[in-house]
Amino acid sequence: MQYWATPQEIEAFAADGAVLLRGVIGPEWLERVAAAIERDIDNPGPFCHSYEAEGEGRFHGNLRVWQNDPDFRAYCFESGLPELAAQFFGAAKVNLLYDQLFVKEPGTTNRTRWHNDQPYWPVRGWQVMSFWLALDPTTAANGRLEFVRGSHRWDRWFQPEPFGRTVTRSYDDNPDYEKMPDIEAARGDYDIVAWDMAPGDVIAFHAMAVHGAGGNRRDDVRRRGYTVRYTGDDARYDTRPGTAKPLWTETLRDGDPMDCDLYPVVWQRDAAAA
Ligand SMILES: O=C(O)CCC(=O)C(=O)O
Image (cartoon, rainbow, N blue to C red):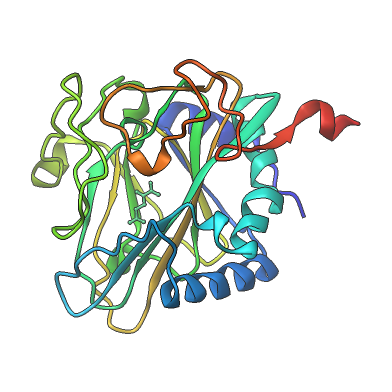
């Protein structure tokens, strides 16, 4: 069943840059995505970027997984998230940007460093957002996401840094980006917001929102997160330096609308009305 955001949720997203949506994804999709995650861990695609675990655990990351597995693809296209993105954007068209896995196994103490997403991505425009799906009960103890409230409106582009020591950077420095301040060391100076989540809950967040996550300090609960990212009407391909090379395409030139095989149109108002 399609999840529609309430006016309060849309307002919270606009003001805070992130909002928790409860029970967006039902048991059937959860089962399909969970099975696809296990397939990806066993047989990861070319963009796998597992981060070296600091503890006993394992931090499995991968992107563009929709291109490898029909169930990830179906989720990105048919789970109702494109329509939901259109609702948040107020857009007539939604493109899939890409999807990404973040699986922290029990005992994986790695933090996900504070960052904002759009500096990594070859896209400009305001209508760029993500939906982070929890597949496990997620709390402060096993690495729930945290956001700096309102940071999407700072208009600050922070230099991406790898999430793990062994990850090869897939992007260059951009001289116009600034260094991320040490938010962790000065948490009290920031308005940090976070939510405990149940499987099927989703956090909708803006691509410029500053966010991070703790490690999974539980020894009995995984923390499987699956993010899908979409763009709306005003998004344009952007060849500025510093973006992640696995997201580059030869098909588009700077300033083009996103539409192409890598960034397919997944929802259109005209088609939905027909
Ligand atoms: O799940 C995590 O640890 C990080 C998620 C994240 O940064 C994202 O989805 O943009």
